[in-house]
Length: 465
Image (tube, rainbow, N blue to C red; front, side, top):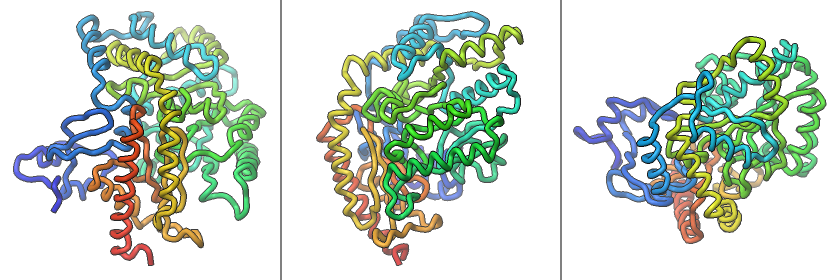
């Protein structure tokens, strides 16, 4: 029996009557109902039946400090009492916005000149798209409007960002992309390497193919390339060795700006403050969100290099204004929470903690590669992806019509663990950064039970034949 099925005037029934749920089969939800969470503690969340789960995806890759960090609550309350809202349009400002921008400039993985604030990763990436177009026009290169993205990339769901997101459900029947986008190959060695091809050889081939793509599209038409250091919703995919070292010279050769989407990887997730530092990326623009406030309040940021900034200044002087911004850009309350979040990262050495406990998670996950359902485990720091396969040898993948990852995710929920089923039957693990070694051990034990029970369910459905 489904413990979360709607009954009477329960929260589940009221949910079905009122809410539209992202990334949900809307018809199935009318019968299945939601899991209604009521409280959190550290890496745990509790539903309205009193069942406790390890939140193995930090909510949505975002609750870096867990679910009961009192200092962030107090920071929000203090700012609400002092100045609950003000904007930064037309030269207005306030202290939280100024301080947070200063802190982010200090933390940047490469020198950055200015910070623009938005409310979500999608908005940050939409802003970055507009900026690269703005720069192209300012430089007298109006043909440079095309953006390079990658197969299985995820850069958000607003209409421009979703044009870069190359996952079927995010574009199908939304009439996307809305502007010219060219998609490079997914840097996933396990699925896409040729037989016997090493990671270094695979990276070299991808760089060669990227140059071929640029030449085919016309270098003079391409404004920028957007990349995630570790690809998130596309599968928690870590690129092969040498990948970014090889593709960046290609982009520089043709004057193509590089935008690093650090929405998931930023603020310690990969064992450095930025995924750019872990993977050797030197971006012209960097976007971040999620762990910027430990997800306690919505806020995102766009870091802008000096070269891009100077072009923006000249163009705004020519036009008379910089015609972009949001009502809640640098909202003082989320900004105050983000300031406190960054202070906690520094005081508690969260990056050092990830470096200390990350190997335990990765080693434990690597052992699960022996499971009959798991073909590959790859990760870095406190993020990882498990590729579910029909057969290990010969390597055989499930059909896209066989929802094995959701089945395993449901089995994990029954075992008291929340993970994320992803495209191509991958499962992501991305716990809060504050997770301790004993909690990692429990996460791994629950994941193993979920895989075992999921394997039985998949077998019963005949997906393994």
